[in-house]
Image (tube, rainbow, N blue to C red; front, side, top):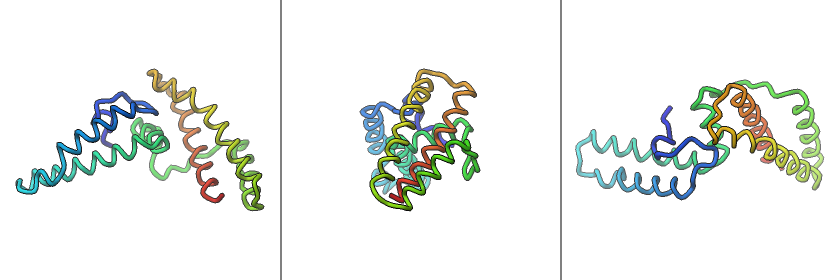
Length: 161
């Protein structure tokens, strides 16, 4: 898995420095734009295409907080593709109630979803801050993984609202 943070010369963070990220993205876009290599040999043109695609994927990932969280956890081997993660029963009961409210319709579902998302943010932010400050403990990664899957669940519910 490529290290997008290394590509941009930025420290790993759940909230990367937006101006620095944008500046590096544009610099790499200019440097590796395929049009600059139109007359080059096939290998150079292919490398420009590869770097351009990598740059675009890195920027798309690091400018989206949800993608950034998943990316960091995958980068550290904490989350795997198509993983069947088991969320805590208490959380699942809350989500069952929220799903029922969505099925019934009305403003209650949106309000309850906003409350759940606010709770998620309040509980997850200190964990992300610890990571950004250098904590790479197994306990922190386990907690971040749990919050990653909780948010994925909440976002699926939001799509139904």
